[in-house]
Amino acid sequence: MSKLLKSSILCSLILLFMVGFSIKSDAKQTITLKVNGWNEQLESEPFIEKGYVYIPLRNVSELLGYKVDWDVSKRSATIIGINNKLVLNSSSNLAIKNGKSMKMNPSMKMINNKIYVPLRFISEMMGDQVQWEQKSKTISVTSKYILVKTKYKNSEYWVNKINGDLYYVVGSNLPKKIGQTELKVPMKTQRDYRVSLEAKQTPKGNVLLNLDNNHGEPGLSTDRYSIYLKDNKIINKTKVFYYNRWMENISTIQNKVVMTDGKKLYVYDDQTTKLITEYDLVALGGEDENYFIEGMGQDYLLIRPNLKGVLMLVKPNTKEKVELYKEIFKNDPERLEYFEENDTPYRGDDLKFIEEKNGVLYFKTSVFNEKTVQYKL
Image 1 (cartoon, one colour):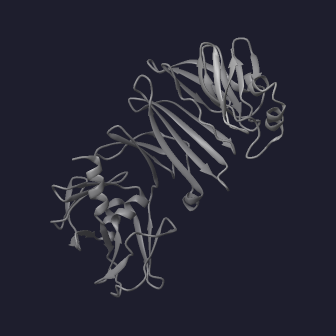
Image 2 (cartoon, helix red, strand yellow):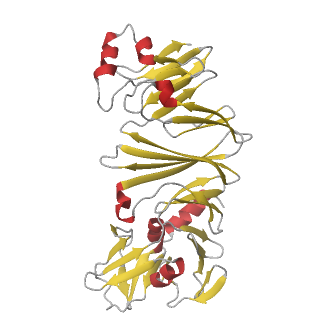
Image 3 (tube, rainbow, N blue to C red):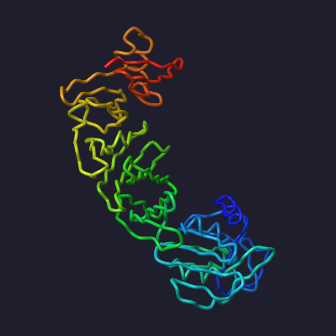
């Protein structure tokens, strides 16, 4: 079955579940759902029936970070959390938690091709806490973990945003903890932090994870955590902070992996995962701040100090340093003045490295008009 079809089937199923509190039955009541202290709006409004509150499982699973797999042939849902795996079947009142069968009370129901299961049972089985506030008709769900995820081939990587734990997940198996990042986002401020995770394959088949934590108002601060993995064992970790300006650092070149903590640059042989070279960016660039790494050649680096914002060509062997905009636009006083005086949205030039070809560096610039410019090595 195609991934698209599976996704379509999963999305078409509104999985709902309920909490066994003593509540007066009233399907017209307005129910409020809070997840980790934050109000949530769901596709299907919560409602009460026969003393139980029904809430969409699919939405709650997304909010709490569960992995949900739907098996069409067996008509069963597999719910995977950090420590627990729960299998539910629409034709049975039995659930399987971590391989052990137990009765669901009340049991799962199918109504208008939609599956309903009990929230209290689910929350307890998955290790979450659920509270009901009768006066305000509010259900509060509290999780011990809030996850950010990324897919990689037939697997996934998860990071718990609360404590930084890193997990590897294959299929419907329980996650395996493989390490820890420095990320720690307080529960009460989760919505003030925008966290993303991506996984890249390196030239020799290893993995580089980039975990970005964008925070503050209006989102000007970013922490980037990079984790270099071989066979899911951590080779190196770095963390760098950038303010206002954001440029994408290079991460690989030829058969090498490139990592930075802003002050230093680390180059690894991706075949052996051994550290080849370490560069002192502050010494090379002359500015005591964090640097972006935008390009790298046989004998040069293209680096940019975060706040000064000027792209530099530096040669570690000779200590030569060139502020590229001054050379590229030396006959264009209008651009020179703009790059030196303008501070909106940030200071510095807008040179974007494209490629090196036959000893010439090519860049794009968009100030006044977009064009390609070059610098001869």
